[in-house]
Length: 168
Image (cartoon, rainbow, N blue to C red; front, side):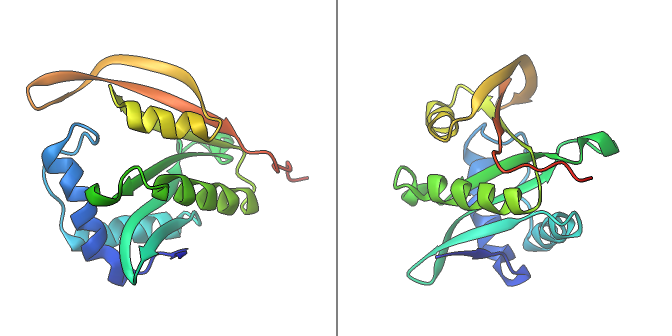
């Protein structure tokens, strides 16, 4: 089941995210975050009128996906940056695909035209997920983050969402 996030999901979402913060270069965050910080992030996404979805399996949250504004200038209002995180033991089971497809459907309803996903490189699993969903690599920034004693590259993948209708 995929549903809209609730603030009560913040603790499990923080735990999912903190696995990546502490153990991987996937996120450039370097300190674990609290559930209070996660509630603030959830509320910020809701304040932007963008979706934040969670995937449940057997009543437990096993992943989440959300969108944030790409940039603050008004002309960027039809573009978002997307993120998806899955519990470590549920990776490669179609959860990321399901979450991204649901997220894209919600973004289309909100008249979002462009979805952009940033990926710390190398990350073959995330690249495969984004490309499976029709996203194309549009940028590669070298050595823009420093984590775990190494400079890290970031690539950006972009999808044009089909049902965009420019407002009159």
